[in-house]
Image 1: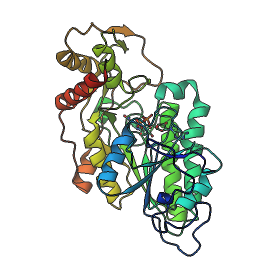
Image 2 (image 1 turned 180 degrees about the vertical axis):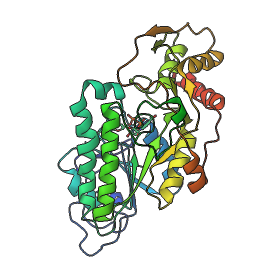
Image 3 (image 1 turned 120 degrees about the vertical axis):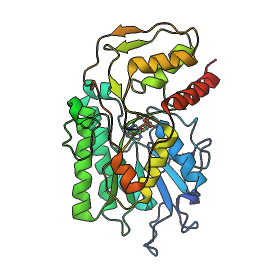
Image 4 (image 1 turned 135 degrees about the horizontal axis):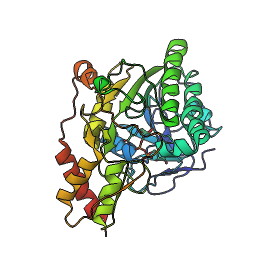
Length: 349
Ligand SMILES: NC(=O)c1ccc[n+]([C@@H]2O[C@H](COP(=O)([O-])OP(=O)(O)OC[C@H]3O[C@@H](n4cnc5c(N)ncnc54)[C@H](O)[C@@H]3O)[C@@H](O)[C@H]2O)c1
């Protein structure tokens, strides 16, 4: 079952002792019956993706021993830190429970997901299988670990609250979540499972409700991540399509601010949920205008029909994170866009 372990840059043998930092001599397939202690491993599912690679850079900088479970379905190993150990596996794989028990991690950042609202609308069964069943596949073995790892769950801030009246914005965590996409419904289902596992099995969890995260390394070829998609297209001189009238608004947070918020929350003992965003909304038209300031000769946008499941306006109230965690985002939108464009410029031929 460990045939798919590799580091970010090269395959490594299946008796890689780095998987068990507490007892490097133990063979990989033998459970450590003499030790009930945690391994010291920080596990990141979906760690090869956009948010995951940034998170791992910071974790490794902090001296953490990071293992990644990722099936590379929407990413590759290009930006994965070379000191991270990659296990190329689907979180729905039947071998996952045994793997979690053997890794015995001290913390799990759970990012692996079907992360597109548009895909969830087309393929709701795939969405629920990865996002709900895949998560339960990780949670079940945790019940049997003597030391419960801290489980940091990446839910959604943009898709969990549903379509709110303007008076309800910015969205507070305390309001009833009424998602209008199957993606939002699957994320909310897992939030509820976490509460149940916390109640029944002492799971030490926390829930992050991210705003729209943007910055270097975001995939410009997917269906989510409007800033990456627009930036790449405009740098290549292609015309962009805005779905709807361009007045839809979202809360866009620069990736380094977001990682800072996540780690502050992970280091706390609080279950959340916590909105991690900026607290204000930016329209799609505004994004295009600001990008046009940085990218000369960009073509005017064309407009297409709105996409099913997209919420017209959502931005997040972040006063809970400010008051309870002492955290707030500090990169202005202009600065974040500037850094993002600069990065995409370097990788665009
Ligand atoms: N980027 C955002 O703005 C944003 C906003 C809200 C929530 N989130 C959540 O944050 C998490 C990470 O998002 P991201 O933007 O980095 O996405 P991403 O697509 O870049 O990364 C997701 C990673 O999960 C992996 N993956 C997908 N399905 C898998 C499976 N079945 N088994 C193993 N690995 C699998 C992919 O290969 C990829 O590396 C997701 O859970 C997403 O729903 C992201």
